[in-house]
Every structure is written in structure tokens, then in C-alpha cells.
Amino acid sequence: MKKKITAGVDEVGRGCIAGPVVSAAVILKHGINLNLLKDSKKITFNKREKIAEHIKENSYYAIGTASVDEILNLNILQASLLAMKRALERLTLKPNLTLIDGNFAPKGLQNYKTIINGDEKIKVISAASIIAKVYRDKLMIKLSKKFSDYAWERNFGYGTKAHLESLKKFGVTLHHRKGFKPVHKILSN
Image (cartoon, rainbow, N blue to C red; front, side, top):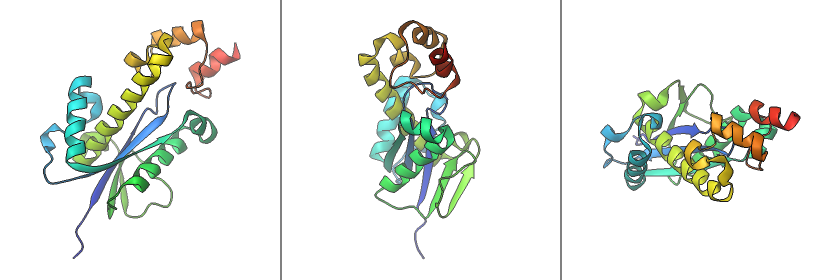
């Protein structure tokens, strides 16, 4: 009988107004501490980074992204699914079951199950949410060094009050999602 290999997939950054959408696909190894795995949003920044390192050491994982242009051209849902597909394609070990957070899956995927709030319910999806969040946060921190007016090192591209005020004051960058309402509104004025 073939060994069952399960991958968990989650994406982060769907609700942001700046930066790419990032997805991770993870297959856990036996050495993983399952007690550490929960929804990435419920873990502090510093703790999340430490847990991400533990996951990386005890899993097969891959990252997939969809750019700001792809988000604009496809829409955020399709871009998220594209990021998921890219993450799954980059896994070195191929799963025979894929568990996906949410209620949509990339087209053409075989043997999968979508699970609403999967990042809270399923450990392997929690691991994917942590890996994706840490990767995206680091990316936004790096971008914030060039675009310091927008405080991406604190808001990570989400449309906080301060971020929206910076948008009005300093304008729209190439990393802003021009099709998203708050950004589009500023461009239209």
C-alpha cells in the first residue's frame, strides 16, 4: 500500500492593499512538534519566526507568490489560487492528498479537500499559514526599507489608518494594489 502523503496549503496577504499574495505548501515530517502549530494570526511575530524555523527543519515546504500585477489582472481570488498552485508545484515530495484552507482550490488539482478555517482546525494547514506569513512579513519588511513612508514593517501592507494616510500624502507605489478600493480611490482623486 502506498504511503499517504498529505500537504497543507494556505495563503496570506489577500486583504492587503500592498505587496504580493503568498502561499505555502507543507508536508510535515515525524519530528514536528504539533503543539506549536496553530493559526498564524494567533501567534506573536517573534514566536511565529521561531516556529517557522522549526517547521522548516521538520517538513518539506515550498512558497508560491502572485505579484501585484497578477492580482490586478486576475483578481485576488485567482491570484491566491495561482500562488497556491505554484507552491504545490515547487514541493519536492508530491502529496497524494492536499488540504487547502478556504473553499476554493487551484484548477486541475487532484485529490484535495478544501476546509473553511482550516488554518485553525488542521495542523498541516496551520504550518503552511505560519510559513507563508513569516515569508510575506519578511518580504514587506525588506520593501519597507525602500518605501519607508508606508510603515510596511509594522502594517505588512494591510490598509491601516496610518497606511491610508501615507498613501494620500506620498502617493501610490508600484507595490500597491491599484484595483483595491482604498488605493483606487486615491488614484481617482
